Length: 405
Image 1 (cartoon, rainbow, N blue to C red):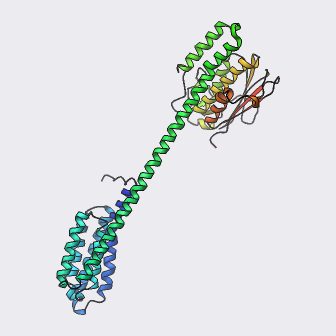
Image 2: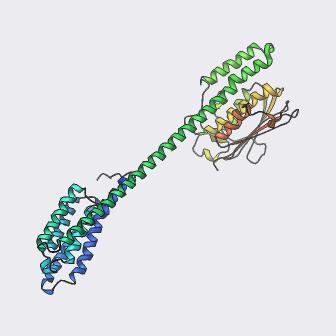
Image 3: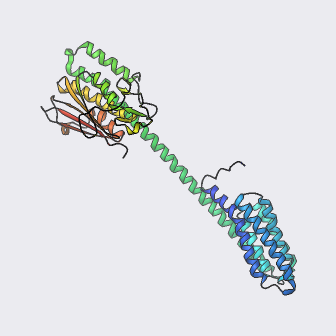
C-alpha cells in the first residue's frame, strides 16, 4: 500500500485531525452513555437494552477503525445514523418518551458529524435524525429539543470554522515569514557578491590605475601591460573561481603557489598546529592562478592537518595574494615572509615585511584597501584579520580561521 503524505500546513493538519478523532470520540462517548443508560432500562426491556449496547460497541469499533485509518468514512456515517435511529425508535420501551438515552445519542452524533462532514451532508442527516426522534416521541418536547439541537450544531460548526480560519491565518503568516527569509537570504547573497566584486576591482583595475597615477611617466609600460592583462583575466573570470562544492583543499600547497607567482620574493615558513617549524603533511593540490580547485581525498581527509574547506582556502588565497601585492606597491621592499600555521581544523597565516609601514588607525574609511580585500574576505568565511604596522617598522597581516566551532 502506498504511503500517504502527511498534510502540510496548519489548516490541513487541523482538518485532518478533526476528521480523524471525531469518529473515535463519538464511538467512545456513545458507549459510555449507553452503559449508564442501561442501568435505568426496565427489567422487561433489558434484552433490548443489551442489544442496543452491542450495537453501540460495534459502531464504536468501526468509528475507531475508520478514524485512525481514514478508511470507509461512509460506513461510519451509516452506523452513526443507524445507532440514533435504533435508540430513538425503541425509547418507549427502554426509557419512555424524552428518554435521556435517545436525547444524548442524538445530540452527540449531530455534534461530532459537524467536524467530519460538510454542511451539505450534516444538514439533511441531522434533520432526518431529528424527524425520527420527533415521530418516535409524538413531537413531545419538540419546543425544547429543536432549539437545543440547532444551537449545539451551530456552535460545533462555528468552532470548526473558526479553527480553520485560525489555521489559515497561521499558514499565511508562515508563508510570509518564509518569503521574507528567502528575500533576506537573497539580499545577503547579492551583498556578498557585490562585496567580492568591489574587492576584485580594488585588487585589479583600481590598484593598477593608482600605481599609474602615482608613478606617472616613470611607470614601466611592460609592467603596466602585465598588470592590465592579469586584471582582465581575473575580472572576466578566466582565472578560475570558487569550487562548485566546498570540498577539502590543501591550503599550504595553494599558498605556496601564490608565493611562487608573487611579484616579490617570498620566504615561506610552514608550521604545525603546535607552532613547531615542521612541514605540513599532505599532498599538494593543483592551484589555478593561485586558487585551489583540486579537492583532497576526503576518505579520512578531515583527520589530516592542513585541509580546509575550499571556500575558506579560496578566501585565504585571495587575501594573501592581495597582501603580497600591497607589499610590492606600498612597502618599498622586494621581499616578504609568509608564515603558515595549520592544525587539524584551524589555520593561521601571516604576511609580513620590513618596509615603510603605516598607521592603520589613520587610514580613512573611504579607502577600502586591506579592509575590503583582506578583512572582509576572511570575515565572510568566519575568520578574523589583525593588521599591525608602524611607520618605518614594516607591516604584519595576521589571518586566522578558527574552524567550525
